[in-house]
Length: 288
Image (tube, rainbow, N blue to C red; front, side, top):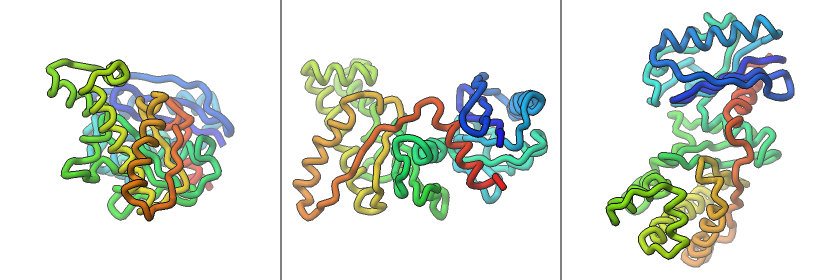
């Protein structure tokens, strides 16, 4: 089964061909500004693939709350023109092929469970650490969407009266540093400053680790996954898991009755995760 595979992003759209075993012919193009241009770009790319290969379907990773039952991308994203109308039949009409689509974080999680860092695991929670905290919940190899497509929206959870996204992201910790010192700083520089003895940087970095440790602990004792996966740019920082584990020690001293310590790993896939996961989702929902 060969598929056209598409990963829709706010600044670029990635394209690839799934040859039945791996991604091939990966390319990218700037994300169009209008719906008409968006339709044209996707249709042209798929038409070209169909001309050169026996493509049988289209697998898509998309921002937003993808409702596969209605074919609507609910919620909001950097691409307002793709939301809140039945976009799936419109795309299928232009492709001349069946398609299946899923939220990008859910796709990334499906990729990890199918063949990445969580291969063989049945129950997984993935946290994507970016400008906010998103993620996905997986049970028996499939996405747990929730009753209102809110599964994995960890950033909305509250800690001490503030959202998790306001406390467990490097972006917000850099903003805090600027407010406290009057100096702008990047995430990489924040960690470096903390290591160099900058007191404010150290407090912000440790606060970041502490918030993540508490979120992961809370999810262990509510959703109870076998494994936690961490993704996003900061996941490439080798200090991330040791920092979380250090504060996890404190959590377990506070909740002495707790015995199940979370198992935490970094996602294996990076820029290919959404594409691979889109294929997995297609195989689950559209493949006959």
